[in-house]
Each structure stands twice: as C-alpha cells, then as structure tokens.
Length: 66
Length: 147
Image 1: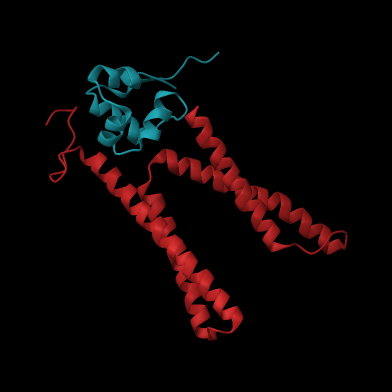
Image 2: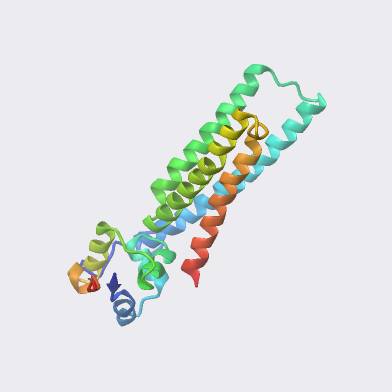
C-alpha cells in the first residue's frame, strides 16, 4: 500500500521518533509503514489520518492491480 | 486541541505516547534485569541442589516451577498488551514458524521412532529446533525491516 507518511512528517519537521510518540507506536513501526514494509491496521491508519487532519484516503492509497 | 496535537504528559512535557513508550522501555529493561538475576538465582540453586548443599522438597520444587510458569505467562500477557502492532505481528509470525518447524521435525521423527527406524524423540533437540527457528525468523524479519 502506498502512503504519504514520510512527506507529511517532513512537512511538519517531525522525526520518526516524534511521530512514533504522537501515535503511541515504536519508531520501528513508523519506519516500517513509511518504507511500505508494514500495512497499518485500520485503527492505526485512522489515528495517522486524524493526526494530520486528513482522511485515510489522503494518506494511504491502494496501488492499482494488474 | 486541534487534530495535529496530542495530549502532553504533565511531568515530562512531551507527547503522552512518547512518554508511554519511554515508560514501556524502562519496564522492559527492569524485567530483563530481573529475569537475568532470577536466572542466575535458579541456576545457582539447581547447582546447590545437585551437590546436595540445598535440600529441595517436592513441594518447594513444584512451587518454584509454578512461580516460573506464572512469571513467563505474566510477561507474555504484558508483552503482547503493551507492544505495538508491528512487534505483535513479527512475534506471532516467528512463533508460527517455530511451531510449524516443531511439527515438521517432531511428527515424522515420532512416526519413524514408533516404527523403530529412528531413535526416540529427543525433547531437548526438538525444543532447540523450535526456539532456533523462531529466533532465526525473528532476527531475519528485523534485519529486513532495518535495511
């Protein structure tokens, strides 16, 4: 799943650790989501979207299937 | 409070989630140190019991075993309740791999042993396969996430 998390975090000048703290997850989790190595649960996806005052669809996008 | 703000912990002035993560790391470190000390104490006690210096009654041995089981179970419950979803996922996958390796090794071995074509199943070796494959998978997935 594609996401704009790294971009959104950079816009606010937050480190991965800072974002992790705001989301109550580990820095490893933030890194895994940013690099596409973990698709967050629905609950975490909503928390992320709410934190940036966006909708889930504005943060995450399902890549088109062949 | 707008959508980009999160509650601050009053004592540290940092986001509450970050404070919780810090507290979690401290508890984890304390449990790790406590487990190390407990392990040393159990090892020394077992050594003394084998040498006959320490007399362990049946009741006290059962009590110690039950305390150990409770500690391990308690830690597992705490761990899965406190860690985030990535850690839960990595642990569950590692445990699943360990369980399946145990089945893949253990069941055919027991079958062959039953037919007399292999020695009896050695639980220590089986345990080593399970723990080894669990640790191997866990390490591999952490390295994959790192690079």
